[in-house]
Length: 189
Image (cartoon, rainbow, N blue to C red; front, side, top):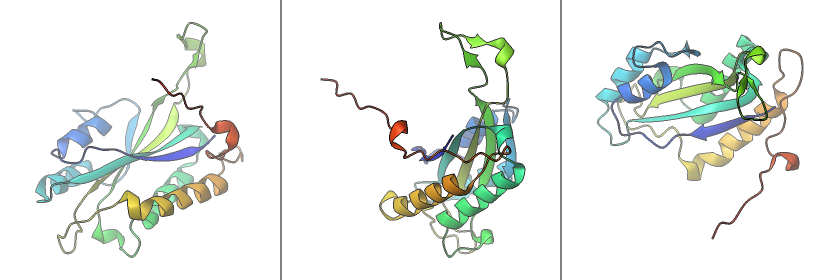
């Protein structure tokens, strides 16, 4: 069990593109729900920004199922992530839309790679975020994540969160940096 943080590449499109990805074109994507923020406001803020990079998006992805982490812990994780990502800013200086996805890994898989219907359950938890790249009080450019300056701080937050968060049954999240979780690297020539 673990959580990882991933930032997505795209950031120059109109606001409808990421909102539609997260919630569906008609805002009816199965296993998606808005936890915090307003999709309409976020889309309008993205469309109104004059900067080349209009938004930053990403995901906090867990191996736990959505129902294995309490609602209170989900909101604590989101708020702590915001504090880590926006040090020195107040919540009214930025907009962030949080969308839960629980559609991944909903079934056990048989030897042929097919889903075993009798094992249907809530999928693993993903907390997706979408941030317009504009500071709300001044209208100035806001860079929510710059890898050179922010990677170490976000990784430290991830490690603390993985260490301190418990599932609803009291189990800790597994360290994603543990040696037994590392993937083998294959060099293809």
